[in-house]
Image (cartoon, rainbow over all chains, first blue to last red; front, side):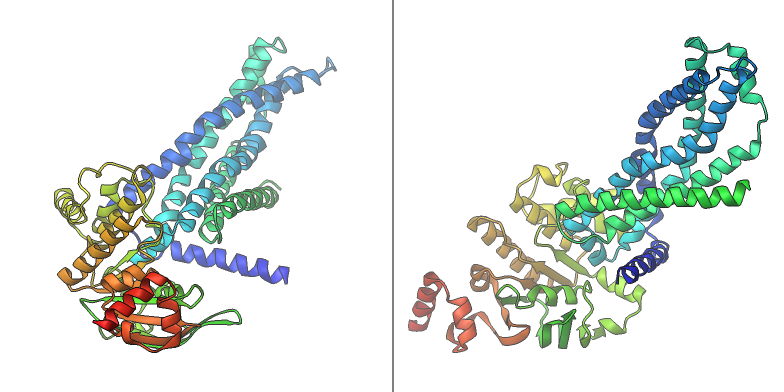
Length: 248
Length: 253
């Protein structure tokens, strides 16, 4: 019974995609909606992403430095480990999980509130394709999500540099050398491929839970929680699958 | 004119509408009344296309809704204005933006023309000076008037109202009733109102359809409702002493 319910939900999710792209809203209206979503979803996320990235980059750097007890291991490893951790996993995956809470709950609660207050019914009755009107601009806005992750990568590594050099754990030249050792440009490509897919999940899963929710204000809160859980679970699962496909 | 024939609608095992047929005429305020759970909201939502009946047809001036393709359905919906029970105004938009929304979506009018039309309908619903306020900054009665303005801004052929007076004081409720009646007659709109407010029935009910347990129990005019012997209607409409006395006075005349 539960399996059937999940299968039905998955089917509904894919049908939602079809509806999002049918009967497009007028471009003059859609343009404004896209800019608003870029502001709400991308620009408003920069502050928290920058803060977390800078300090977590610093912590990764310090913890690596503290574990380098063997004098045979070069100090360049601090920069190398910080680069690999931040670019491969921290920025694309863990920032996305954090964004599932920040961006995802915003999407679910804003669409869910519209459902509860009959604003979505009002759109439908007017002849507006409400899924296109509400979800399409969010999907376009998250195309800029890799830009956020790019900033996160830079600030994570920069935080690591500041912590290592100004914390007295290594010389500036060692850290910069470490950043350049065995650099694989494909790792950056891999990170951005992941980020792009996570961005789509970040917009579509919370939108699905908000759009199809039933009930009142309490259910909006519950839908936000469920959306966060499912978005996080799928990000972690997709991360595993993509890593297996792209790096092995 | 909207004609519904033998509409049936179920949710799971429960049959809510059990074969309702009636005609809602243009230029008249048609009221659907009945107790809670009688199926009037389901009937209204079926008319709006939010629910799909399993049996029966709904035709809008000869266009059978279930026979239309999705583009034709959306096209038809642009001819519909709807006043929701909770107003359903877009809370991130100002009063002007809410009212101008259908024009912005479905016409190629420029900003100046949209503004002129918005000003005109806001004046029509006696709301001047609230243009830049958000829905949260105005009273419930004003929100209802904004919702009416939004519903009529596109010159709809059909206007649906779900409990237009709920949560309003008697003065504002009468004002809203009169506004709906005037607009209906002025623009020859087919208006369907879902209500259990007996004041509305007495004030603006040109045609009344009484639902009971998902069936059309009775239909008639405001005048006929005073003379009916139908027990279910009498029990429902004249449950308060005030309306009993109104009926007695009317029958004496």
